[in-house]
Image 1 (cartoon, rainbow, N blue to C red):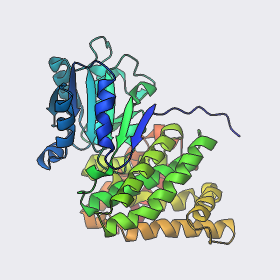
Image 2 (image 1 turned 135 degrees about the vertical axis):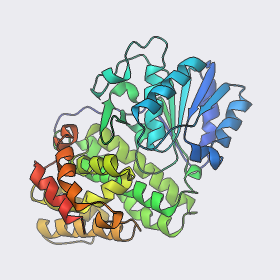
Image 3 (image 1 turned 120 degrees about the horizontal axis):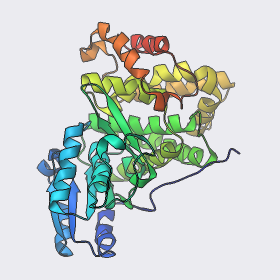
Amino acid sequence: MNPFQFQTVPNIIAGLGSIQELKQVLTQQNYHKALIVTDAGMIQHQLHLPILEILNQIKLKHIVYADIQADPPEHVVLEAVDFAKQEQVDVIIGFGGGSSMDVAKIIALLAHPEQQQNLSEIYGVNQAKAPRLALILIPTTAGTGSEVTPISIVTTGATTKMGVVSPILYADVAILDATFTQGLPAHITAATGIDAMVHAIEAYTSNLKKNFYADMLAKNALKLLNHNLAKVLKDGADLEARQNMLVGSMLAGQAFANAPVGAVHALAYPLGGHFHLSHGHTNALVLVEVLKFNAPKAKQHYAELMQLLDPRSTGCTDGLCDLFIDHMQNHLDHSGLTLKLKDLNIAEAKLPQLAKDAMLQTRLLQNNPREMTEQDALHIYQAIYA
């Protein structure tokens, strides 16, 4: 067994209706003022009202920051930090999808009155240092796993993203209550569900930090996600299946926080940066072709995952590997997502630039089980073009 280190959020509360536990969480400390970090869609659909009700019940001052965008650009992050400083909050509640939770992490860090670092100084691995404000994360999608990762992704330019990766970003508490996910449109449910499955698969095949503990989490995540994704796409009101998806996403997040993701994410990021597609959708676009590319090095792991998902599956390692790739293709085919770049009005002439940009994701590519060149990346983009 390889030596490993495992870190995660110290307090995870999961279950339908578990948002009510927020009351106890907040009354354990003598907080002065809370900041809810979310987006306009959450406010429009009034999903935040149960949180406001709890804050009112315990008479905790609070304010809402709802200007979070998907793939948050630096200026939005900085504006949110400034807002938190001006309001002198001392507990941050990130509520929403991955973008809201990612920004909440950075606010908790940079809005602390004794924090000396600025945003430009904390990009990369282990650059962000204490102190930070109290941080509670509540996901409303079953996909990113951001509620249990020490990672925050920021859009740094017109087409580029950078990550802040540090254990200081682990939340104090994550609350997983699927009642917040039941109104999600099918395409968001599908994209986020595929995203979570990718996290589990890439953690299980991670090159540098694959380990026993992350493997256990990744396998349990993939079983839950595999069994429940079709259920929630068929019946969005199936709360038991939605809760299972939320827990599966969380387990996958714990897995890849400790055994990081690879080339699927590296090739997905340029698609999101250039064409503003959702992160889950871009992962879905490149997933199967990256699995095919990785198969020569990862076929044993893919075969193990196939037998996990269907214990009745038999055959040699190569055959089971092929079955696994076909199985994931079947999930994509039933997702309702557009899976060809041409159908998304992406010009074929853009593919070389995408391949070049993918090579900049060295933090991710080093985790891939097979070394990838710019030409390899170009071939994958070409394969998913039409």
